[in-house]
Image: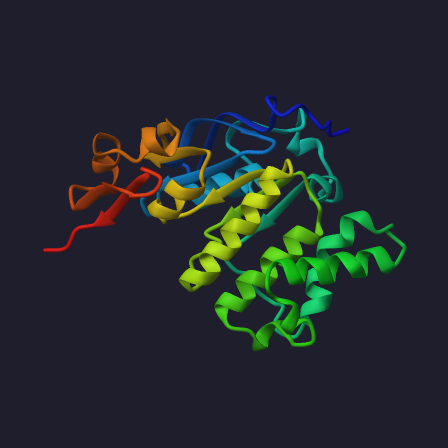
Length: 267
């Protein structure tokens, strides 16, 4: 049984994770990670650094070539898909094969682990679906087909499905990429509220400045391993980021909070 641990004890723990898509080309090697209830851990790294691979290893979508992943003290490899879904929700970058599915039914899919195997969703499940759509600013899409939505609208519906799971851990793969600035902030505000309520949140992203504003902790991947880990102020520094992203970066600070700003520098 997956246990609900205290705030200071990792809900998700990975030790010495190794993975390779091809035998002689490791993507990740020796990666350690702790994700605690109530925190927002942002995972950064250049293209191909293994960010999405790490998320898929944590969620059980991929099997590590070595090392271990635990969820509430239990090895994820020993959990059934329903057990995993009760305790971990995942927001992928996209999902295929659902264009003909009504949005409300798609979001209801987030409740499958809570509905008896031979049962049907009840009034409570219906209420949660509508509430989750409202929270993700997607209630206006409830009667439409998923295939009728823009990429940004789909992203909000994917988030609503994850919220409907009511899982204590929430993993998101680039959740703001397809969104305009207003919805980027709205989505991260909502995710921040989930963390404040005790959810353990992991966000994979390329956005250094949203990381600066929302992350409680940052994990920077490079060359298959962890290049740095710490607060935004500790990681978003020239001496840490320049070896990973190159020299064409400008560093500053938000005038109100003093948190770091990192921008690409043109010619």
